[in-house]
Length: 463
Image 1 (cartoon, helix red, strand yellow):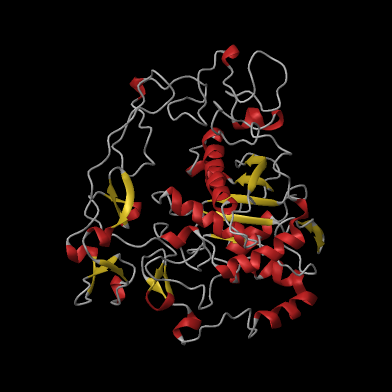
Image 2 (spheres, rainbow, N blue to C red):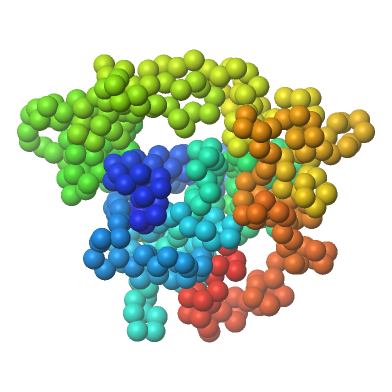
């Protein structure tokens, strides 16, 4: 397992955790847990079975603007500037340092120092700190940016995280014919634009990614921990058979003060159990109707507890337990996942175009390129959903998310307009590395000047 130090900056803490350390940590751990499942199920060595290579959380840091020596507090930074700031943190005792933020970076969903199988190229998993200029840098760092994702599905956020983690493992963007799917099964994880998350290939690594990741694991995975080093109780992730999991004593009070640490060997409460001896009733990290004081949220609070479930009617805490009361499903055909899908039997599982007996397409008119469009199988006319009478309940038009692909290999920007990739508009299909005609040529040059590329221009590679 790759041991992680996860970091929430003040903006992620403010917007996604609503200022609550418990909520912030809980969201990060949920995302890491689901990203872990994608990695562990992947067959990297070709033996037909998942290789159980994934992640455990070793350290958690949640920042606010009041914290001393906080280095991620600059209000306006580009993606490469943010990564450079993050690299000043000390991640020397973990496999990777991963930060979570919410910033307007013009559609950039994250950036990572890439991993290389060439051991002379620093960066990525298990990279020790190195001296660059007048300070030490942690080049085993990555960050994920959830700007304007407040209404995105959980699955889409997980895939964005998996994408950046894979860069640290050596995966490049899928730009080869054999890995560029785009068909009815969708693009793979390392597609250069945002994946919708509702197609079979969206949760899979392509053969190109696997070929890039495997040698990096073999040559640079020396810091990986054996799964039996850290017990299941104590990994900060509530799992089957556990009432809660706040990690070990050193982090427990920060993550979940309602829970007994995984390494507790004395006391009235067992590890990974609620601290009932201290009159605690529940854990807000696991129970949706639990306060930060470890008591049940009263019915008088009128607290909706299942707002992340797009295909269920809202359910409110009743004050009788920490669990969210079971709710009824929304009617079949209700829009979900930012309007890309519709609900069926309580699950967001059917593409909106398919629900209309149509197929998904990309519109070509300038002002329609970032709208969700469908076409009839027979005449092939591609029309926005709004032209078909389908809109959000408030009457607004359904658009693709920021960073999603549009016609001619473009991408949708914050204005919901399609911006073209310069190389693609020229008809080129090769990847250009900082002006070099091939990755090999770039690598040869970068061996001599790697510090410049790493600290100045990495955002050119990874979106």
